[in-house]
Length: 635
Image 1 (tube, rainbow, N blue to C red):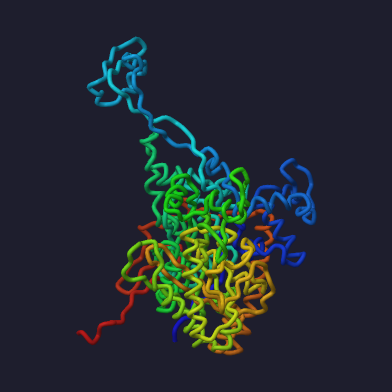
Image 2: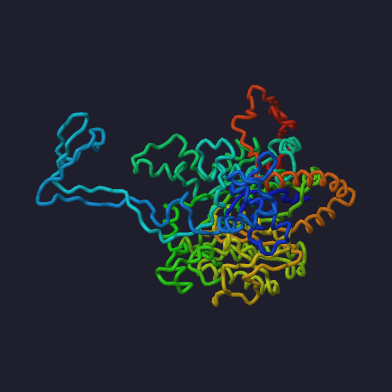
């Protein structure tokens, strides 16, 4: 009997806000929410953005004035809306109107005189060029005379044509929520996201760990670009060029595997599987696939699946921009028939399946918690859905490494075929939807829509619902599919399908005959199946089949029977109460991030080991060694 990977929690952060309890999703469909949900969303965002806080049990603004929850939208609504989703890049990242750079300049003496200047002797280059004549002065200074030309670099600025990104909500600062020790922004976001995900389960983490053998827990996570701000690889590669010193942390903390290591070492204390794989834009799905496979095989019973990327830096933006991959100010002006003096609507920079000019970079961290079905029922975990499989296929021979290819046809067709075999054609045709890669490039809108068109034709699907989260949060690269999964879970919960409101209409070259792509949010009823699709650079294609919580519970009832499900329901009521408690605390900005720096170190002298098992201090269950021989036919 194959174990079913069940989603029991999800947390994180992106430009729409916090992931747990669908806050980010609700920000996207804000205008379609009922009054209570809308009020909760504004409260959670206001505390996340440090506009209000709880002092002595009362909500206050930053000036110490009392604030009623019902007044938050009226007082801060415009500021919250303006400070979320895609918007002009804020100066905490860099100044897009005056981006720093080093400009080369060659100095030549005028009137055939030499170039003469005074400097500190310690600032002389080593070795001193032969054309330099150096004369010692007092106070450790020297006089330098140069008869030839002198090439120098000086500080300058440039007007960056890339001006928008999907940034964390304005004012959100994970570094002040725990002792962040000068860690890169992406790793700070990882600590926040992992805490949010674990607490969203409503289960005590130590109880989860004591419920399984320690090696049956796994962490599956990675970044693509790595930690590219000044505290990570970004600072490492440019430190000496700027005359600075490389720190002892920049290399290690900059690695793209570090999100996995941080979750293990500082959040969960995991001693089981640790796994990191990068697959461009499909990275989250690659790690999800590994977790799903391990759960199905019985190697893992609890999986933390994560990805993080915080790469809104001048260097990364310029790299993508010079590939003509990003939407720039000229392209946006051209799309909207604006003059060179007009400011574009940066909110609409990303326009999947509409007339567009490139994708928009985003930052995000997403963490999903999965269990096998048996453990989920045993613990009374909240069933948010299940992932029966994730498919990954490459493109074969390519001419351009960044161009699309046939691999995504395979992943989408396999995912749809699986859904049809599990739930039947009627559920597939009437109650499935696609979370599109939707990168907002002219090439993607054609190639991706053609894939959906051909798959829909093959499976007789009409009006196939398609949404594209990158229209709101940008392309977060590694966790992009995590953003899509978060939206899928939101749709399952709220029955509101996010339209692509950043487009006026579908572009003429989009293959839309079998697709339902709208530019407004709408009620969609109960949905059974979500397809999470990713078309990554280099031929990294992946598609996940995700089933709704209602479908998942029906599957579990079929496998375990009414008595077991009734027993689960009793335990689940306690979990729901714990979830409500955390949601209330999180909406009030009380996150209490888990950061176990040196807390709970394992004393290796207390490890008990024999030929059958190994017992680690701090874990109730021992790790037992397998006594079965998988290769009996060979001996």
